[in-house]
Image (cartoon, rainbow, N blue to C red; front, side, top):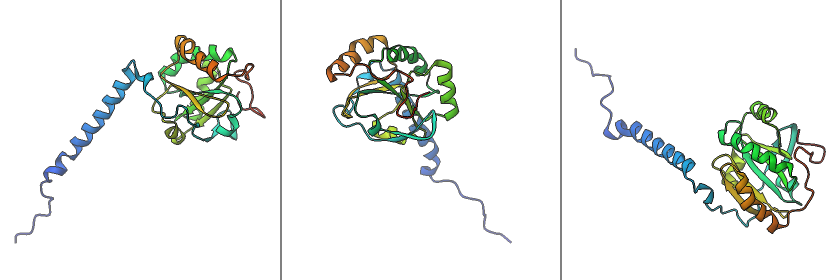
Amino acid sequence: MNTPDSRPGPRSGATRWLPLAVFAALAVLLAAGVWLSRNPDREKLPSPLIGKPAPRFSLPVLHEAGRLISTDDLRGAPYLLNVWGSWCPACRDEHPVLTRFAETKRVRVVGFNWKDEHADALRWLEQYGNPYFVVAVDYEGKAAIDWGIYGAPETFLIDAQGIVRWKFVGPLTDAVIREQLLPELDRIGSQAGAPAAGATLAAGTAR
């Protein structure tokens, strides 16, 4: 006796082509990311945050379990927010430049550790040195969305009133600091004698 064939029939054309379409979309996104990373003018991309209040966050402090740091805590003096991760090769290239600048004590340098493992971030700073006044940690990357962060390193200058004044995408260089950052600091009237790199915030946050 003949019985109906229980095997699934041939997939429809749309279903058959779906995996290829997904692969093609992912390839396009990857190519776009590579193009942006190689584009020499990517740091010139305008930021909609310039001239506006810095997006608020309240994030864990890397070196002090249970402690949070917020944008409200940082107001009152200018600060440089530097986005980095232990997984980021360009951050390693930038680090000596950032360290030299932090040692001038011209302005507080605040670390924004992005999508990193806690132990990896600590080990990275132990190996290469900690130039940061304090390090805020965005483990899941949710706060970074509000800041428009799409890569590392990225650096923001925020004035004493909490207004974003400058943004740079890519690793800082001595030339960028000299030609862009320092003039911007002069314009916002950066206060002399900002806390030294590695100094504490209130009860002590940077180690």
